[in-house]
Image (cartoon, rainbow, N blue to C red):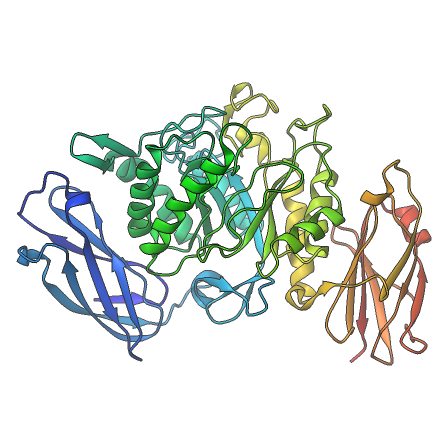
Length: 535
């Protein structure tokens, strides 16, 4: 048996022995030993008709041996052994060239197994199981609605598909839910028809595209006490079925919620996360999609399973400043932070105003999270995030747009520029600069100037400095602590990606350089400013 590194193969085991509840009565494991003695113990999943599957993605090139075990020692059908020959991955997808994700040593960003930084650029599909259609399209340009959305984002260099299984009936806030984990007289049992005919196709396609699948189990609202057992079982089953894919688990949507016993809600979902951790053979990262409130909820940061923090800035006129993100990062110190839900393009703003969110509003949040020390941004757009099959059909009333028109909105293309820009400036080395190193003089066209302060990022030696300047901000800049003799500068239009060089060389005086940005501001609504040492 042969497999490419980081790509899955299935080891299938059949038994004639019957169980009343095969999912809950017996656990099947594959114990894999790699060429350097490394070991993986992976939970198998029941797949119907006396069939269990152990899904394995080898993490190193060479010969792996495996032994199948079970918690039923009387069933010899589970006593299976063999070998898998792992060969190098030959494709171009970064996820399999560099491996699954972990947290960087400094706790500021996510990286691949080989240490390559992972720049999180996600697209939101909360109803991908319940509403998105794999084998059907109502737009003549596409044969599959689901594939069309995925392929478009892959083309635009998105690398995260943010979604939710929407299992059970915890939340009636929007969209449908499906009973993927069914309660029977013999206990909970996975609904294999939904997995076979719906979820598997989509998860396989996402994995084959090399996307990181950031998936939650359900929405969080008002989980009754008996539902914790349901989602513990669901977490166990999905860890076994999909844990060998490039996946991170995001627990539940909008925790801790907005009404009811919030502390109890947090406690019960914590049990679910702990269950996932128990069966998490690949150590897939875990987080939680937080509620949209101010101050941001502070939950789980001390839990061993909690790996990175996902804010939800909101969709309207709540505070969305750089200070807000700096405070969020401070709250979750030691954890990478990213924006997971904010300003869905083309949707109606949702908190205090009634206006359509445009690309400029959206991209401002993307750049602010990065300039505040974040490690990525998740986009969402009208028609796609909650899947509207056609204008006025589906969705929850935050906009009226078909899914194919949502794919045409300009903001996603501007996020391609966003990712290209940060990867071009070695973003993982940049940290927010204190005011004594980046002093700005600003003028404001807003009655809330605290929302418009500009912070710069720089590397440890001040050889590269990056600033994002909004339409209301910088008039003059002074950088201090520059260590190179000469620098060059350029600025970039974040809407088009066009770069313009600043004239002449920058020669700091005693490590200090001042710049008047008013001329650039007159020609742009917002822009990126980069100052780099001349090699």
